[in-house]
Length: 107
Image (cartoon, rainbow, N blue to C red; front, side):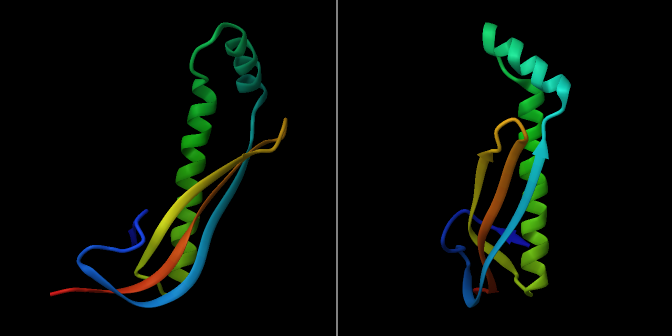
């Protein structure tokens, strides 16, 4: 599956637009990372637990995006983006979205 943040794919022709696809994950923060984040906010520094959680969330959301595109018969996803939202004390939402397309390699 080809994934591109661009609106086109150099070397390929879009032969069919299959529509919007997305992958979504919502992760809760565990108590340890919340305590660590509270301490770091007082003294500064990277919130490594939160960084790890967000990185894992991006991967999971992108994998779900790919699954959704494959279910539609896509060869590629164009204009792929990520969006993240904070759910207060509950956790973090991460969405990956884009346009599923069929493509043909140009000769």
